[in-house]
Image (cartoon, rainbow, N blue to C red):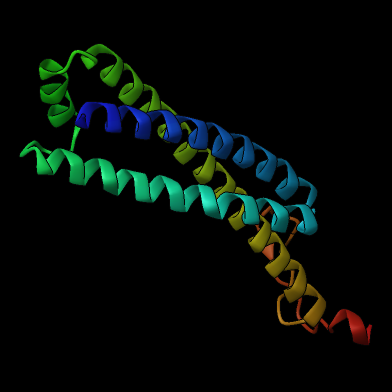
Length: 155
């Protein structure tokens, strides 16, 4: 009974993780294009998937703990040894783990792009406001600051 429930949770989450992975790839593309409308749409689709993955993860942990097993791969391995569906449980668990790792890598990649875009935007705003002076090279090849910079709006 418990192994069937666990297998259903794995199968549901594999589908959700695959969808999330596609959305993360779409998000990366939309971030590169700075398509805010598309980004908002993607966010709306990601949220329910993340909630479902979290809820099912907690349900799997509770199920393993109720059987007095650890809520990790070792606990799943122990349950698989007792179950007629053990090989499929392990295969689905490993498949889900791989997908979640790929989702995490995609999320980190998108986060790096967001931080890069934020830094670029911040630098441009600083130049436009006149608060930051762009670094230029002097005749010796080192950076030199030019004094008396005025904001672009006053130029």
